[in-house]
Length: 193
Image (tube, rainbow, N blue to C red):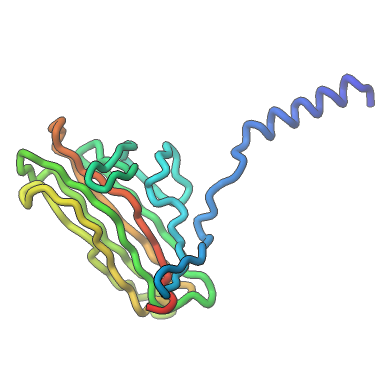
């Protein structure tokens, strides 16, 4: 092989490898954490504080990056009559038991408009019994006034192989001074609480 051909092939390989992302988010990876004598594993690979435009672990629609004033955190805002974020997660082998989902919310609506709304729910599909258990995480709309909350839901009967699905949806009234926002969506496996 001639030297110019080798250089061309290596240059082409470099260009192709440079165009590929350096890494993709591992949506099933957990991180061990602890504080105050409590321990848990965090599976929140993407929690909406990252200010991304493309998500690996979530399906999203009509969301834009923003900042939540009350929490002082980066997050996302619903920008349309309908917006959503959905994530499905299969519980790893040996990780059954207690699981928790939480998120931080912010709804600002000086017009008390029902079209400014945010809701969250979680389902756990149990393939062993073909049953699904539903949990309400959050609901708030503009007629209820402004709100900044940190809702969570505990799930105690989760088995390895179950699928936890997080659903967050909402709407925006198109009033420039109204905002429907959320951030820090956490999926965690508490170990001793």
